[in-house]
Each structure stands twice: as C-alpha cells, then as structure tokens.
Image (cartoon, rainbow, N blue to C red; front, side, top):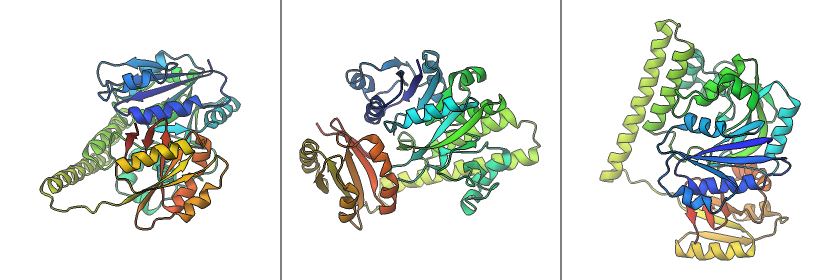
Length: 395
C-alpha cells in the first residue's frame, strides 16, 4: 500500500462527503486506502456516508477523543508507506497527491510535507507554513508584530513570512489540516502526542521530526480548506484551546526558561483569552437584546455547470429565496470571462462550480482569480451545495 489517508470527522458530514469525492478522483496513485475516524458525531455522519462510500473504512469512537488520539487510532490501522492526515473540510485536486508523493520519493530525508492551503475567498491560509513557537516567536505573534512586519525574518517567523509562496521550501511546522508523512519517520517519533486535544499536535509532531533529523517541507500545491468549520477563530473556545496548546508546548520544551520570560507570555495568553471571552459575551448579549442589529450582507449565487445541475439549482434557489444567476457551461468554456461580466457590486458573490463539469484541479486553478475579483468559492456535488458558511442538500 502506497498511501493511507486518515480523516477525523466531527459533525461535518457534507464537507467530508466532498472531501471523499475529491479523493476518489485522485490520479496516478498506485494504491490508496481511506480511513475515516468519527469522533462520536451527532449529525448522522456515519449513516449518511457509509452508503455513499462503501470502499472507505469507518472507525466509530464512543466519545470525542480529540484530534491527536483519533488520528493515532486511524494511523495504527493503516498500512501505507505514506500517511496523509487530512481535515474533512478540505478537498484536493486530482493530481495533487501524486505530485506530493513524487516529491517525497525524490527527497528521502523529507519526513513530512505540507501544502498551500487556499481559503474559500481564494487567499492563502497563513497556517500553510509556520515556524516553531519559541517563547520569542510566540510573543511576537501574540502582540501582533507579525502583522506590522509581515516579511521580517524574526518578527514574522511564526508564519515564515520571509519565504516565497510559489517555491518549495524547508520549513519548521506543517499544518495538521493536510500533512503528508513518511511512515518510517512517523513511527520513529511515536505518532501524535495525545497530551494535545485539539491544536498544537501538528507543532509537536513537526518539532519531533526535526529533532530526529527529518526535514519538513512546504509544497506550493493548492488544496482548499474551509478553515475550521467547527470553531470560529475569534471565539473564546478557539483562543482558549489554541493558546492552551501553546502553553503545553512551552512547558514541554522550555520549562527551564526563566520566569522573567515565561510569565509575560502566560499573561499575554490570559489577556487574549479574557478579550475573547468579553467579545463572545458582548456578541450574545447584543444578539439577545438586539442592541446592535447587524446589517446582513446580501449574497448572490452564480451557479456554473451542466444542464442538469443548473435545472436542479434553479429549483433549489427558488424554493429557498436565493438571489441567483445561472450559466450553463461545458468544462472547456471560458468561464472566467463569464464571471467577470457578472460582477455584482455591493453583494457577496459566491461562484458555485459543478464538480461533475469541472475537475477539482480546474476549480483550484481559479482560486487566485476569485481572490482578485473579491468572490467566494462554492461547489455543487451530488446534490450538495457547499460554501464557507453553508452546507445544504438540494433534495
């Protein structure tokens, strides 16, 4: 077995369905198995997915075990020479994995490789490559110096802002959202550290790989990541869990540093958590008492695809009062020009591609253009409409 794909799912069945459909279109990978570890979902994920993906192996956990422990369960039951840890709210292109595996096979010291993750607005996720969060690097990030000096070698080291996005490069930390690992290296470091429940385990694993003499690489191969559907990055829960993971890492590897350095970092983490808690409380109080009614941004859906998709989406849009436009196209049509001509100022435009018409590689190739136009990506696959904020069945 050449490749084992391990995916941990928790209540995102529609996003996972698209992730699996994309994986099934993968080209030029000699042998591949897909293992889904379900962390006790309550949205009917397993019943929904099992009948649609009979060749996928599903492992059901009786409790939410966290990201690290659930991944380790899947890894121990996998057989591939390489292991891909993949988030369920992602999709890869048809040739992405073959290109990444070819790189790993020609770079025998590469223990791990990460990808260029695109968000739904076409922008590159900064988490695609990172540096080790040493006390100083962590402090620079928390006080925002990486934003003021985005390309500085030291101040922006957390996101390695000095490196170009279009070139492969050795990095320190690979994102756990899409992490290709050599099994030999993974077994040498002892799998993922289960002291981390969510966030931080990818930093720990990357750090251990470097300590064992392996290389971590960033590859400019695009994937889409809807980026944390289960947790908003401004929420108290995210800040609490993320910075708690950072504290675990600092305690594990920098326990001997003087309190003069450690205490300010801990105070910064506490301050971040308190600010997030106040923002969360303000949001819910405002919502409950309708103190600051938000002006909802109008959405315009631009559906592009084959005749059958257009007919189904027209019915769905009418039934759900969606402001929508429809363009029937074949796979080789110049759809970028069509998008340009349909620009809707003052509305959030969501371009919904028919994945039965366009390949995932083709869709990913449009992400930079969508970013330039200020559009968001949506996809339509097997009666499921997905956007950054919505997952809906059209039947």
